Length: 259
Image (cartoon, rainbow, N blue to C red; front, side, top):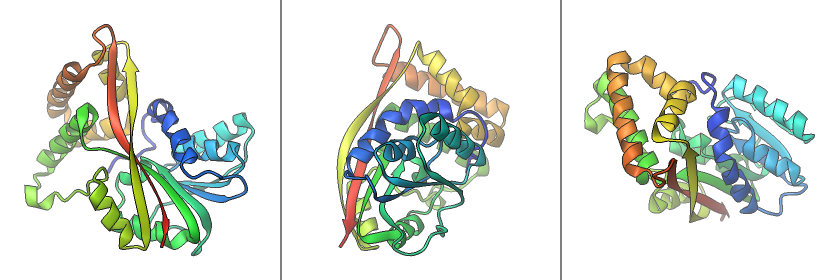
């Protein structure tokens, strides 16, 4: 698992910021409500909710990203509590929050049953959730699969020992949260990423994204060079703007409440 303290994830977080607004829209009204933002990162959803009057707690295991979130909150003149910690177990009492959100972050590295159980535990009986997850289709998914395959090849895991929960599968998600007493619905949304060229997009990720930096360390320079060539080819093939670089990815917004 990558350390999200390395690199400059805030560059990617800025591109994901529109999803924070969509997610908070999905759980309105938030003013005066207690809201937990899981894997809050640089604070996109936390700051959006706080600006609308929610009493926000953001939790993340990455110390550096929490520092960025605190600075952003100060600059935006909004109040939020920032907690350094993991997701299982969450360091909060049962029924602590009216709303639980997460914009992509919790799906990386957390066991799905553990995190769904913890969400159900800290969520008030009348509470609501809004969680954004990637759909396993399109160029972004292809890039992720290339990275995953390179790492698994390095550690030589046989296919049967590579279980991975599909956070973009609606049926999987309904079963997962139903097992913990939460009924959900999903809505598919789209987000576009832009750059001057496929090469620029690839280089920015390779130089700054924690997952890319951790992958380089894990697989070695020779394998990493081949991986970068494969990813660049995928970006070029999927480019939606011949004059620059644009790729559009589907994501789900999961909403629901305890039953």
